[in-house]
Image (cartoon, rainbow, N blue to C red; front, side, top):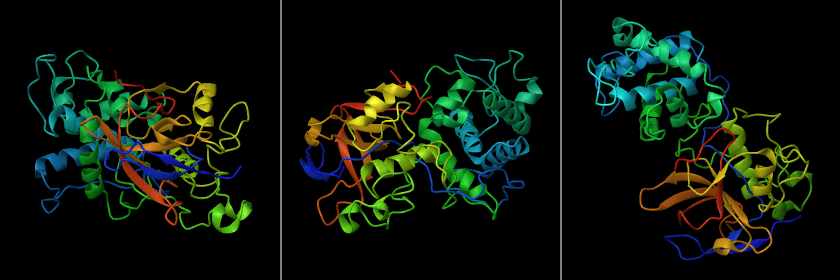
Length: 357
């Protein structure tokens, strides 16, 4: 089945945009493929280490968290979650006081005096408190597949599961700077779900589309999609989130659905989600699939459209990203646009994500 063009008039900034799409799917934002996303050596924050907005003390505490993670064989993504949580709990400071809900909370992670987090001295130690948090994180089932803020919440059990989300970008900057010379997050390809800065990182973004060479093997990506269609880009994002950044990919056009139905049309994706028992909701979340039913928001009346949530804004809109969303000659390239939250038909989440009420 070949792609067909459609008109989508759901953009906020631009009243109508011509969208040539038919293939599309999901994501949870990440960087491109990486050779090694595991721990590598120790981390040191010297007086010369600088991250704008953070003191030497805060960076030393972040380094202690990363070193605890590396000692416990925690991948970079887990180190990021740990630093993000410490930012959200204490601002990366060893606090000798709690708050209203937890007056006995102490340390980087504001751990309670309930016997689960060791002694007062343990909770006030950056290294020991970090190790105890990490051990608890590693016990969370499929924590690697969870949205970072949800993974942190499963350990901390705070009232707002999305409390940590706003600290993710800062955690990425800090961990990137503190990583040793043999490993840098920038360009490393380590999966960083929720990082809306990844942009156009499709590995085969220069491959010929079916329009250029016809509907044959030369126009098919390693994911079993036509190159540079919206589902091709989105399926790449899904694989990144699952930690699969090179062949053989965990999620493939021909094997995604348990009933064997392929993903050649965007309209098939919601049914595919339901067939796998994966969650569907009405709230945009970074990395979720944006699903347009046929005819909704100007989508093609037969095929619909799918994109990916790149950024959630605070004014009732979100930024979506995808491929094949502009008129020729820019039709099979990367695009972004701002959309009102209520325009899409649904948002499709990865299996362990939960919709925040």
